[in-house]
Picture 1 (cartoon, helix red, strand yellow):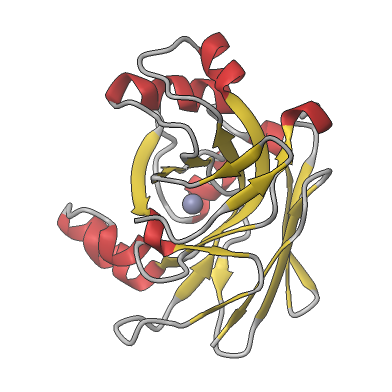
Picture 2 (tube, rainbow, N blue to C red):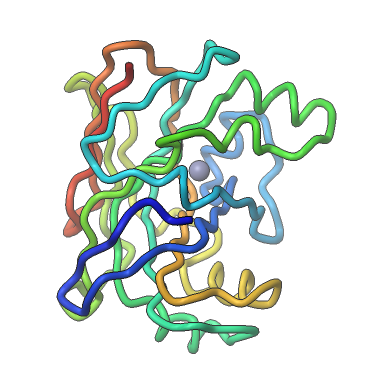
Length: 218
Ligand code: ZN
């Protein structure tokens, strides 16, 4: 079950799924030694991994390399299935800044074996979201920058328009696989500059025009 309530002017939403894409910024794909995909690389997190901004993230004991990934997050406002990018754009009703926390050491092991990524991507508080702003209050141009500071030092700073697959295309492609339901969230991938955080680190990120997301590493 979902553990968080997303409150907006348009009412409350209860995410059932956290839909994510990886390698959606060319420089980030390359910094991890990955090929740039010709199709959105899709994975999911359970909604119980979600937490509001301000959460404390505990590094699981089987990892020594927890990374931050700062991302634009989309809020889906209605049930959609097999929709065009234009219809997908209409279904996106809000935005947040998100942190897709990732256990890079585990992910590298799993990638090497060709195994699924859950052990690297799914743990409590692994998906943190800021407050949401509705599309009616923000006309996103994708010229906005996505920024992350760790302990006051900027680590990620890139415009959203470096995305390989834009939000409407991501949502349209995922909707061909499964029904995307009202309240579901879509993490759209991270730009270059990901890195390791250790106990005590304070993360603070934002997309221009969208509320800030904060988290602390325990
Ligand atoms: Zn990510």
